[in-house]
Image (cartoon, rainbow, N blue to C red; front, side):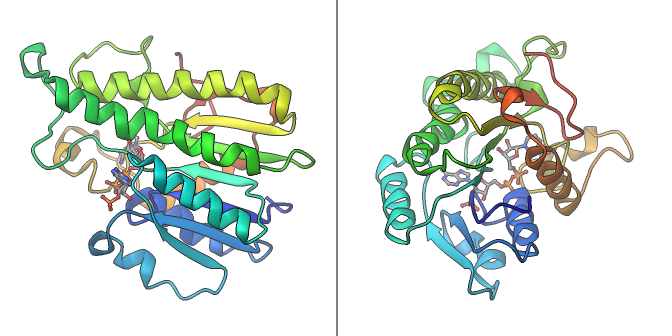
Length: 248
Ligand SMILES: NC(=O)c1ccc[n+]([C@@H]2O[C@H](COP(=O)([O-])OP(=O)(O)OC[C@H]3O[C@@H](n4cnc5c(N)ncnc54)[C@H](OP(=O)(O)O)[C@@H]3O)[C@@H](O)[C@H]2O)c1
């Protein structure tokens, strides 16, 4: 990632997004890291980082105006984001729990999943792609999930989460086709981080096989390695944390 100058992480308050932000800041060549959080209450880990290159901003991925404000700030600062990672996502939230059966599917909850997990990353792209440099390599990545794979779906359940990640993958693929014309040096990646020890996975960790639950730091390092190595010819890929393709 030696040529990267400006990185931007959405959903950096905690979990994998916070670990990615911390690791990006270890790269001394980076001039600026934008990191978004939704709520100060859950963002203590981000807000306590003391680094003049870090610019933390409030953003809710369900609010298009927040993306516009983010893009305006980046533009006003004269930055061209060449490394963008969308980490925000939900599997459960307040009364929303992943469905075990069809009878538990509710319109409002399904819509909420799509709003955060699928449409959020696309709104980020809409706001930022015009600012991504065209004259040097650049990366745009979104954290997807293995369970978003339709081909790999043998267990069922989690209707909303699965479908919202499948929709995210299709959005990223479609975006990659369009950007191959406008941004020939950009690589767009949807990546499965591996099962990671965060608030998102906490209620389901008892089902994880021993040795298959990874720390946020470990997942962040793997994600950065795979995303950084992305070539424009691979743009629109859906990959595992080890870089191997996942069936759509
Ligand atoms: N952990 C895993 O095992 C696993 C596996 C597969 C995929 N993933 C994916 O990896 C990504 C990161 O998850 P994580 O494990 O790090 O979970 P996490 O610790 O729960 O973090 C989720 C992040 O998303 C943010 N977020 C949620 N709704 C938002 C909204 N409306 N606007 C802005 N930010 C919002 C949260 O902000 P707040 O602090 O404000 O809530 C938080 O920063 C997600 O997309 C998830 O689907 C995780």
